[in-house]
Image (cartoon, rainbow, N blue to C red; front, side):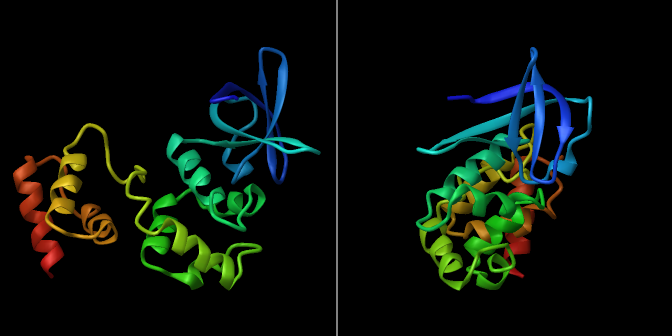
Length: 186
């Protein structure tokens, strides 16, 4: 329905923002409304949740957050209102690492997420999040090729994500691979 909405933030509430786009104010539920500033221009990537009794827009600062949100709401028993607070920290790599590392206790810290739902999230999403760019990788470096090379060598995405943060991305790809392998073997 709506891919994104660009405009000026006119109102910040505890669970949503109102963004003005050419004279129309869109109420968009976002993970952390206080990360926005009044009267500033933003592009918010949106998801429209249409039900019989409501039409709700959910919004995200990045495409990666939106993609993770869509994966989360595909989990049985996890709706948009439960998934949204999971993205409130703004650090989606921690959430992905918790899912890949089967960290039930981390997932249970979120509102309305109990043991059963946390285990369902892990069951449904483990191994499916490596497609999402977590923000750790920069487009201008060789990190995608580095991840691909390490994955083809049999290393797990969780281990690669931990190591890739420590690698000097200004080096040539072969140097990055060598450095990553040293770190992975420790």
